[in-house]
Image (cartoon, one colour):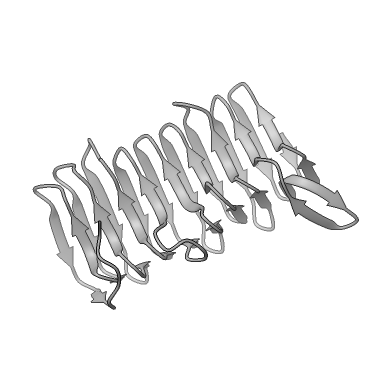
Amino acid sequence: ITNAGQIVGATYGVFASAVSTITNSGTIASGTVSGAAITLAGFDAIYLASGGTVTNQAGGALTGQRIGVLTGGGSALTLDNAGIISGNSFGAVYVQGGATITNQSGGVINGLGTAVGIYAAGAATITNAGLIDASSGASSRAAVRLNNGGTITNSGTITATGWGVLFSGATTPVVLDNQAGGTITGANLNAVYIGSGSGASVLNAGTLIGGNAAIYGDGTNASITNYGLIRITGGANNS
């Protein structure tokens, strides 16, 4: 599917049962249309039941009442974003398998309301030079949540009310490279939370800002190297 116009569906903007490729420079949304106005409703802008590839070009918008881009159980996603992707209740990007996600400079991945920015159930590789934001609404959300480890390279901005980056229950080592110019913020909790995995690696040449801790770990054998700024502003305790 290649879209340069407007696709709006009452339940899904686009639903695909087979592995699919979508390129968007227009608007894909779930909801209703009245004149030029789109009212969000239904579920997701894009639901790829078997996974696939999504390219959201500059000027493109993927907006879901629940999720911007969703994959089905166990399926993987390759995403390249230079536009805007947003979800209002679950996540802007919600992957139920592994993921390779690139958010370009100027790209925005926005978790609104109670939504996370990016969630991946499987191991994921994320490269961010734009903005990944979950800083509005609920106070304990993550901008990026990886449930099975992976690698994050950041030269842009990752910010949330709860955790900037949350590695939860990782069974594989996790790697975070926050490069010069990169900022990761967890206003109430942590810039980076490392779960129960072993062998995490954090390299910081940018800025990490946390509420009660910039880096908080429950795992073992973590390696932290800092050439930048790590700052604590005061926030809620982890529970």
